[in-house]
Amino acid sequence: MSAETSAVPGQFTRRRLQFRAWRGSRPFWAGLFVLLGGFPIMYFPYAHLQVGHLTLAMATTAGAGSLIIGVLLVVLGISLWFQKHIRVFAGVASILLALVSLPVSNFGGFLMGFLLALLGGAMAVSWAPGRPPAPEAAEETGTADAMGESNDLSGTSPANGANGRHSAG
Image 1 (tube, rainbow, N blue to C red):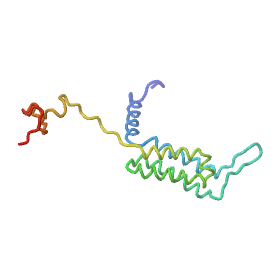
Image 2 (cartoon, rainbow, N blue to C red; image 1 turned 60 degrees about the vertical axis):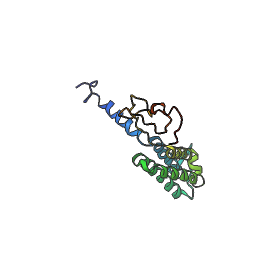
Image 3 (cartoon, helix red, strand yellow; image 1 turned 120 degrees about the vertical axis):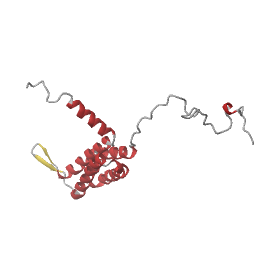
Image 4 (cartoon, rainbow, N blue to C red; image 1 turned 90 degrees about the vertical axis):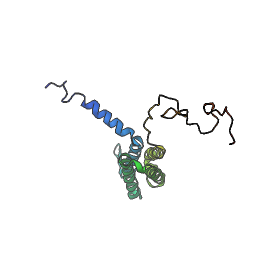
């Protein structure tokens, strides 16, 4: 078997289309932004940055709070992927956690985590599942039913002899 031949032809395309269908049926991008917003929030309070020979520690007194907020955002992001029915709760919770991260966690992970979590939460709240396309009818809607009879019950249709006027009795 050479390097150019694949084991199963078309398997990559089939998996890619399956992932696209899975991704399209849930708030995927909202979950990704919320998930990515949690990482800088929980990383920066524990980071030790090297500037030349100088070690800069970003540790704050609220390091545990930053860790809790970051972990909760990561869990909310993953739950948006796998439990799409909780999208409103997860979106509102991630917006609130992003706002709380501003004073607690080094300005929300130096605004990176704050903005990602805020954007992801807003996308989660506003996401709505798509509707399948309705089958197109060959005949005009509202003029005749399946038997070909008129379904206009207003009494104003010229088809039932009312000549456009309502009949009183």
